Amino acid sequence: MFYSLFKYLDKVYDLPGSGMFQYISFRAGVGLIVALLMVIYIGLPIIRKLQRLQIGEEIRDLGLEGQMAKKGTPTMGGILILLAVLVPTLLFARLDNIYIQLMIVSTLWCGAIGFLDDYIKVFRHNKDGLKGKFKIVGQIGLGIIVGTVMCFSDQVVVRDHTTTAVQQEQVAQNGNNIITSEKIIVENTNSKTTQTTIPFFKENEFDYSWLTGGNQKWAWLLYIVMAILIVTAVSNAANLTDGIDGLLTGVSIPIVAVLGVLAYLSGHIVYADYLNIMFIPDSGELVVFALTLIGALIGFRWYNSYPAQIFMGDTGSLAIGGIIAVFALCIRKELLLPIMCGIFVVEALSVIIQTRYFKYTKKKYGEGRRVFLMSPIHHHFQKKAIHESKITMRFVIISIMLAIISLVTLKIR
Image 1 (cartoon, one colour):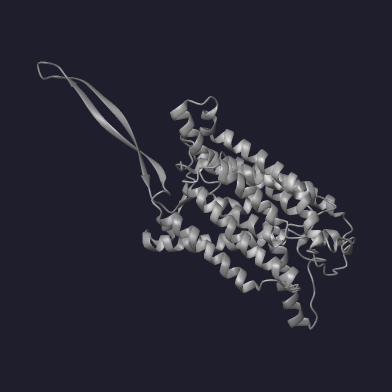
Image 2 (cartoon, rainbow, N blue to C red; image 1 turned 30 degrees about the vertical axis):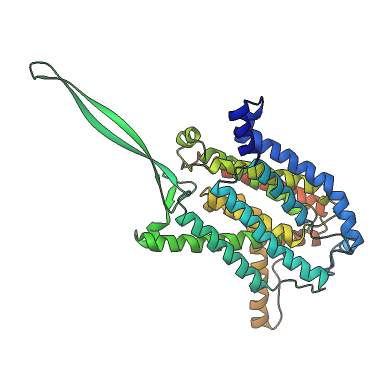
């Protein structure tokens, strides 16, 4: 909103300082600060309001040290994160940008799914919350929307460099050929494509149409299916990671920071050409959204770090996972997610391995056995008497390392 307003003021009235709003870096920085201060400023009144309304977390006794002391801690704090993301985004981002529109829709969509889950848990006193099949249906719906827009919107394109060699001849007046030279012409063309970035390969662009034998119609369908799988997987994995104070916010900040850097590089024609990565016009605007989200997450940690004064609930965790998934799809870096979101992957795998092994051993031996002391894996470490603040810090350090590795893949091919 402010982008268009100050552009008008700069053009019509030549207002001093209004030109700063044309720069992505300025709007992103201001968005981060506003989001952070917004969470800190309104966080405490919201916590007190939730306490008065007795909107507290129902704790299942899992035998973890200090667990029951958290009973009654206000939940549904994800609403605070969503507000701190959406308000600065609406103020400072370009709302005519298709990628910003996708991120706003994704934030609201996943936030609504999480809100329904929290509402059923808190107000209906149903510890199971929203049934898993309804969550999946909602996530599939978002995947279809994102995949379809990415495939068929005219605003979602990749700019290709087409190089053509043209032979030139200079001819003397008597008709004799005296000089022959070659001129290189580079043409930039926007194209619809199902290409994405694949790490560790020299030619790091992978086209989904390769899997369909070049059939573009089936490639679009395959891309939409991939979008559904990615949104569902990352959203649910983030939800599993949200198990101890400050864990999900701490792990997510490096991931979102890397996505913001990649969006800036992909949306800058000079840097994209230098790094030999896809140039995606208008994707640089996503930096505003990324930094706004980082500000909201840092602000939320003010109240969510150990001992937590508020929990984000599924309203926040499902939204954060969905945002990360859609953001990666927008900048065509979804195949980097297993590296960037390595903590999410391990958390989800620990649950899958534990569940499958328990069922297998129960069927074979008549008694279920476990690989981990408890899953997700952060509870396994809690069972080993490691304090949750130490677990959180170590997971954050690992997330930072994985974020750096993800950036390094731009040069390691």
